[in-house]
Image (tube, rainbow, N blue to C red; front, side, top):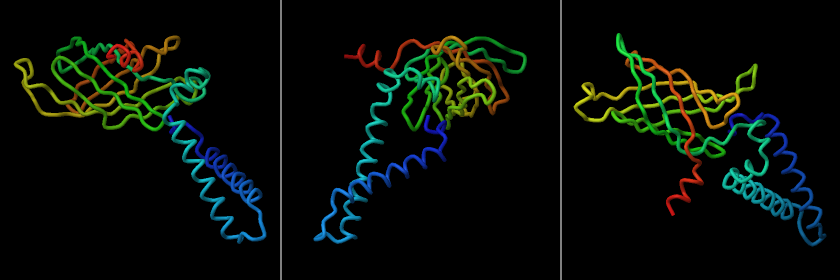
Length: 207
């Protein structure tokens, strides 16, 4: 989600905040017996430590912040953490069909990834990037993955292959993702995902 932030403005805010904190600490430490460089060193270290603590706290508790302030789902990017039921509509040469799978999206303030487990294969993320449609602002997930077929009697070719998809969030439901995909095996299709539970629910169920 940090990729969706206006980095120029974020850097400016951090710089101004950092300078303000340093100046405040310098003012509080002002003492003729303390050297200027000593005071600057303390101020710099203190403001840097405070910025690190704030960042770590935000990184650790961002889900609680999103829950308390739902508008952040609109201003930045929705929380997609959790398990999802998945339907894969596939096309391969002159054949087509459907397959069921389970997906788990793991998201934090810096990264997002999706692992998929199907009957005949497993896949994991090579790259995932949250975006917003430049015109409508609709949340999108650009997803590149590596698939490993399972050594079963149904699977003839066990070679790994890569794929890519652009998934878009439902217009009225944040629990629905869908989009087209294509692979390096010259196959293509359509993904439908419906959220089954959030990660918090999964943790509670496991206890």
